[in-house]
Length: 384
Image (cartoon, rainbow, N blue to C red; front, side):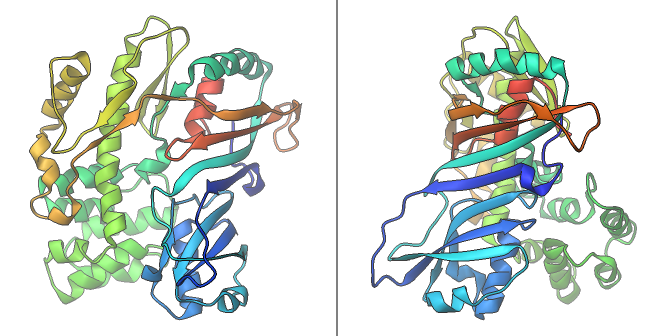
């Protein structure tokens, strides 16, 4: 089973309401892009406008691989300037003006149109049964692999929470998983030449913006790891902390569902996930732990206590004493979620995979839920 085999196979559009005003300081525009991640696209647009990226606001980060449409706000930039911007595979269309910056939390839902390739008759037989199940019960609201970046954002988050900032920096610079050979080579070199910042930065690929920001600081301020990590946008640093909380959520949900009698286990970037295949009982919400999380005597709290002990973490650690601007009180997340307007297209011959089939899926998901997790729950198989 394959997704994103070609860029047009994965399309997503934001569903967002924003109040407009004729004389507002913010210009709202739709950003349609292909093969760009959100941050990089907006960074290029900000350069074309000649202003800081801090003037721009958006409700959610969209992946590079795919065709995406999202609403962006920019402070005190006239629409005509945006209309004149020319960037490959990026289209800008003006929506209007308003008095409010678009922020995380403004997004209501995402609308997906996805082509699944490399299917067999067995896949399609499972799909038929799982669609009925998911429409009735929903699917486990795991965080998808995007939440964990190259597979280490939660590890970086743990080191930040524990105040081990040098370790966090080292993970950012040297951790290597699924990326290009050039990237792996650069990270291996960084590990071997640790401390020789001027040498390391010379071989870092041009797209390693986070790594270069850290290295530039270390070149000027040797061994100031706290200063180096603070060179990164606060939004980026919070993603590391949130990724670690997400890791806990996935572990708790996996533990609960793995104890159901009828289930299917697969992996998401090495992390186990489990999908129930029959009726089950789970709490409506589970914690994303923080310093205000309350531990009681219920089963969920016992699981969390056990995981905290295994990870050598205390809830107080989420106050991030060395970087208090990143502290997190914790919150809760729905355990299961139902896709809306789920529609399945006709089965067709897959022109990219010999003797295999393809099918299209259309659906809406609330903000924060992952299409890739839904697809796994429908086909009970990992993605390639």
